[in-house]
Length: 205
Image (tube, rainbow, N blue to C red; front, side, top):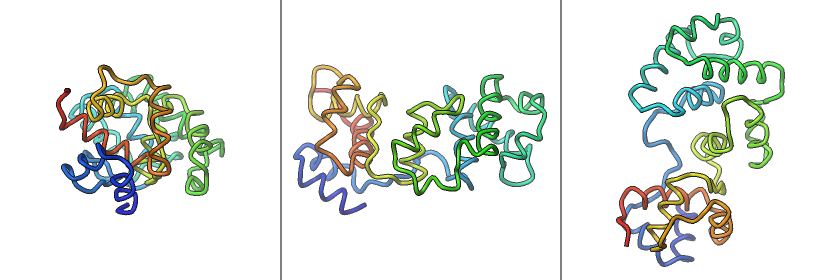
């Protein structure tokens, strides 16, 4: 990771100043401890979508309490949908988590081999699951698997951070950001991490 940070600082003056301000990058979630398994991590991601942190955490805790230990695909499928709903899951989230479980059990999504899959192929496989879009898959690659060259061009924070770091009049569109990110290869995940920090800490202008 330090090699990636040093390389970004060497290549880009604005990035170098930001790195000096915020310190070393870490591709770990700032908000939650890591889930025990890939399946549990993806289920958690689905539960947290479009919910405020405290509400999502409460529902996630009730979801975990339904199981004897870490939730597994088999245990989810053995559970009546009504119990998932009683824990606070919406109908859509319950359906999404069951779809994830079904696809893992059937072998459509092979979580035991994710470490061997290229980024694009893994994104394609994960987005076969109801409720997992490209952004969720990219966050899984960055924060669960520690992949160094993921570039989440649809992420608001990355777009906002780029605008503020480079003093642009408006946020770059995803297609524009895709091209702008080429100079950060093969460390685009690390660049994205710093752009999130830029969105948090820098003021426009």
